[in-house]
Length: 315
Image (cartoon, rainbow, N blue to C red; front, side, top):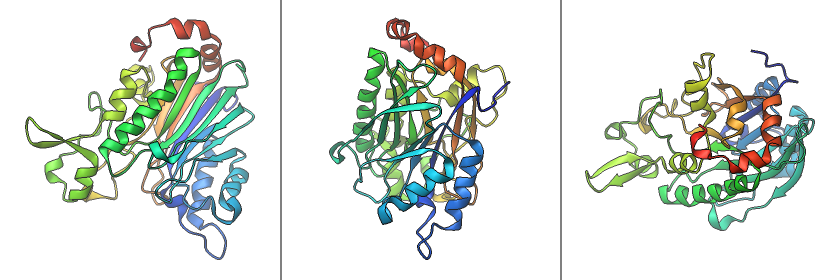
């Protein structure tokens, strides 16, 4: 497989825990620098970030530091109820930035970062790029937020493409997953159990929240990790690895709550999906999706065909 940087587009999502930590003597901590060395070594073209906790401080000093470290243009989402805004970085050699869409707080606990892009190889088609961090404390809140994401994806009905992802704070539908489901009877943190489950009135038991995955895939969007594990000819041993839960045994163990979704045409450009190792840098692991740049451009150019095809059969 040829995946040199000029032939591919790399998309990466990472919830870097609390932005690497607070400043020390006015400077970002060592963990932040090491995290950006890891990101830089992957050379992403689109980076979806969560927990940009300190990136507004001191006139956006840390945001601009990340831009310099990565050679990318950065954006921040609107401040929400917490101190952990989302962010998004774009490599402008690969993408033209068309618009930074500002979302207000009323529909979100943490508003997403939403940027409209165009691939320079196919400049006539908009790409809706979104970095999200869904509500940690409410299944109903995540349902509202997932419905808003589905509304943004509606632009694919009018010829746009879609790349979105981040910290979903809930689980994928279990069918085909390699990470075992959480056994909620063993979870000792009752608040966490309530945050991450729904009550099944028929049985009186708690079941894992999967609304975001259910609604996005029902709407035709695709999880490239599942696609890679099931459909690519080359083995993808790390595509469906857990991204969280390694450090919280009272929460039920490892889980795959950090995910990326693509529209049902871009999915055909996926070459590789890997959950990267960021032990010691964050409580979450990054997810990297590598797409064929040529196939991605071909998909984007086929605007009329893309709108008329049946999305539900594509992934």
